[in-house]
Amino acid sequence: MAFWQHIEQAALGPIYGLLMRLRGLVWRVQRPMLVGIRTLVVRDGTVLLIRHRAGRTPWALPGGGVERFERMAEAAKREAAEESGVQVQIEAFLGLYERFGSGVSNYIGVFVASPLSEPQPPRSLEIAEARFFPFERIPAHTDEGSRRRIAEYVRGERGLYRAW
Image (cartoon, rainbow, N blue to C red):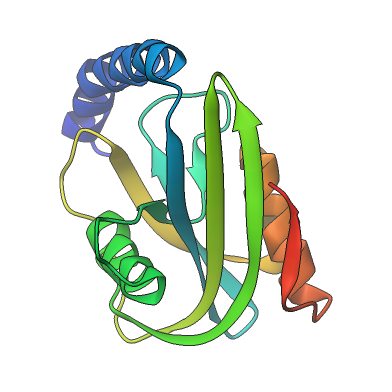
């Protein structure tokens, strides 16, 4: 990493972490139901992961919330592009997952996609970098849900309904 990238990470990482903690507090009060997506972007035995600026497991599949009146597959394409700079073509639906905790009911659709471009993440408070990794060399600090989705894909599973 270049010197300025280290400075940027040192400054933006704590701010991002604080915002995520504040969001958690708001969610505990509001108790929302969320609909989200993750995009499993695969190419030649590799998978695209993004690294958030903060957290115990900052590496994850690109993803986020589905906007009002937005189709889930379109949200998967949008989030992949927003977080990694990669334009994608949706190929399949891996599954629907549920995650309950901190007062939130979260339902997450996972789509399998092919990349149409290379990673070029925009400069943002949320995302520090985006890269392709071989399936067998996923970073140690990748979130468990993303690890399970990658393993399901590698095993050839599809049409799943499970806990995140």
